[in-house]
Image (cartoon, rainbow, N blue to C red; front, side, top):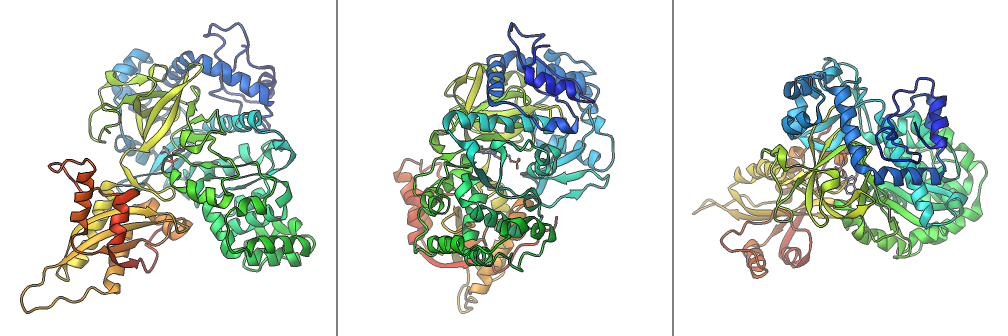
Length: 635
Ligand code: AMP
C-alpha cells in the first residue's frame, strides 16, 4: 500500500477503518499514491489534518491516473452492490464491467424512485445498495412536484470531506496569508424529517453541517469561521443569519474571506443586512443581543461576541452602512477581505452584477466546487479566473462518471428518450469542445443515473477532464435552489388561467423571466389577456384582486422546492404578473423573427432572459400584480 505518509498514519489510527481503496496495486506508479474512495470511520479521523502539499500531490496522482481510478471505482461499486435487487435485474449477480456497460440502462429519477420509496417505507437498503442507506438527501430537483430523494451511505461523508479538504490548499496556491484571519461564510441548515421507517430526510448541506466531519473539523488556521457552529445549526434561518452577520461585523478586521454556498444565499444575507444593520449596530453599541433573537442556543453562542459594549465599532459600522449608496459596501465593512466565494456558475450567474456592485468590482469572485446530492463532482483549479470562465475538474474518485454526447452542440435529450448504452462516453474519453449530459453511478445505489446537468469540456488537467457548467436540462426559471422547467410552468399557468376563463377572459400568450434586481429575486410572468365578452354583456373588469389570485394560483401549483423557498426559506419573493398591452406578443414574434427565428417554426419562448426581447415586453406593461400571500408548504 502506498498512501501518503500522513494519510497512512491517519488510516492506521482508525479503529474500525473500513476498506481503504488505494490505487497502488493497480497503477503503474512507483511513487506513493492515494485514492480515497472509502475512508476510516473513526470519529477522530474526521479531523483530516492534511497538509496542503500532501493533498495537492495526491490530487496530481489521482488526476494523472483518472482512467485507472474510474475503472477501480466501478469495480468496487459492482463488488459491493452486485447483489442488490436493482443490479440483479440487469446483471444476474455478475460483477463484470462489460456486463454493466452493455446491460444496465441509463435512467432518470422516475426509475429509481419506486426503490427509494420502498426503502423509505421500511424495506431493506439491499434492494438498491450493498451498504445501509443512512439518510435520504432531499435534492432541489423535483419529480411530479415532490422533491427527489437521493440515497446516501455513511462513507459518502468521507468523499464529501475529501473534496472540501482540497479547497483551501488550492486557494493557498493563489492567495497568500489566508491563514491569518477568518472567513465569514453564511451557512444554513434546513428542516429535516423522518420517513415512515425512521430514515432522516435532509439536504446534503444540512447532513454535512450536522456531521462530525464538520463539527469536529480540525480548527487549523484555514478553517476558522466567524459564526459559531451553534449559530450555523440554528433551524430558524433569519435568526441564524442575524447572528452570523453580527459575528462577522464584530470581527470585521479579521475577516479575509466572505461567502456562502450559492450566490443567492450570500446576496440574500446582504439584503438582510441592509434591512437590519441599525439593530446590529445597536447590539454592538450596548453589548447586548436583540430580544428578537429568541433561539436560546444562538443567544448563548453569541454571548462572548458581545461581552462588552463597543461604541467605537458601532460608530464605524453605522457610518459605513448609513452611506447613501451601498456600492462597494463589502470592501468597506470588511476591509481585509481577499475574495468572495460562492457558486456563480449556471443559473447563479445572474447574480454576478449584484455582487460586482456590492464589491465595486474590486474583490475577486471565486467559484470553488461543483457538487450535488447525488454525488460531489469536482473543483475549480483556477479559482481566480472570471466566474464566466470557470471550469470544474471532475475528481475521478467521487463516483463512476459517464457522459451522453449531445449532438448539434447542445440539443437536449428528453427525459423519456431511451439513451442507448453504446452511446455513453467514459470520463477520460470526452472530447474538448463537446457538450455532454452527466451520468453517474455511485456507491450508494444510483446506477447510470442522469443527473440532469449539461456540461462542455474545456480541457484536461492531467488526464481528468475539465468542464464548464452549461445548464440544467429543462430548467427555465431558477432564483435559488428551485428549478422550474417549461412543463411545470405551463401546468401552473394553466391552473391560474381558469380563474380568467371563469370571468370571460382568455390568456392569449405568456412568457416569463426571473427578476433578480429585487432581493430575494422573484418570478415574473408576462401575460397578454383578451376579453371574450360579446354583445351587450359587459365583462367584469379585471381588478387587482383577480390578478393577485392568479399569482397565488400559479405559485400554489409550482413544485415543492419553489414553495419551500417562498414560504419557508424566504429566498424567493412573491410572484409577479405583468399585464402587457394587446399585440405585445406579436411584436415579440416580429422581433425574434427579425433576429433569425424561423417564422414557420416560431414558438413563443417560455422564458426570456435578457436583451431586446425583454426590453420590448417591459415597455408594453400596463399593470403589475404580486402574490398577496405565501403559497402553502409543509415540511
Ligand atoms: P441539489 O440536487 O440540490 O444537490 O443540486 C445540485 C445541482 O445544483 C447540480 O446538479 C447543478 O445543477 C447545480 N449546481 C451545483 N453546483 C453547481 C455549480 N458549481 N455550478 C452550477 N450549478 C451547480
